[in-house]
Length: 214
Ligand code: DC
Image 1 (cartoon, rainbow, N blue to C red):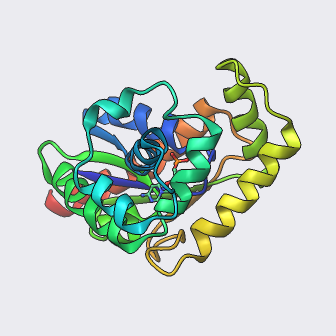
Image 2 (image 1 turned 180 degrees about the vertical axis):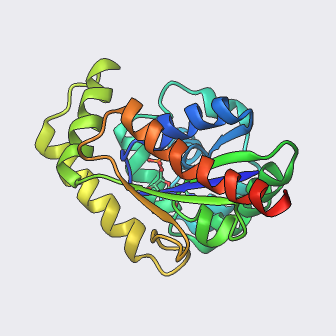
């Protein structure tokens, strides 16, 4: 089984995807981390973040060790990631890896922006997880604060809006729900409630499958 989870930054996709993978015994891939890793490797090398050739090269030779770098989840890396994510060469370089991961038994939960539309258009279940920009900025702000990064809330809200704008308006694989995606707005849901809602959708899909068979 392949479960595609897409949505804007800080909508709660990551935590939800991880919990679903554990619950259904599937593998888990945070695809945003791949774009972050490409951006961070450029930042660490002192390369220009707008340099498409350097970014594509970094994506092709991605060093897995960078995925555990302490700066992977920083606000600065997130902003840089949304820039390299707009480059078609970078997206193409990361596509194969994501598809192979998804196709490896027993299946996987992938979270990102274009999983249901581009990476796994045939996914068994597609969820599009959203929340208002204010709620998402608050979550991101708390997360950064817990990691000891003190940033003004207004600045985070501004970054959330800018990233939405870039993610939704890029020409290649823009952020949008697949036609057959289930929408899940988590503005008023805590993680447990979002987890229950997602499970209801997935279990209904599994039941339809077993009804057809039996
Ligand atoms: O989910 P995140 O904040 O870790 O994602 C970092 C950036 O990567 C974000 O701006 C959008 C981009 N991204 C993407 O374009 N496609 C994906 N499948 C995942 C992330």
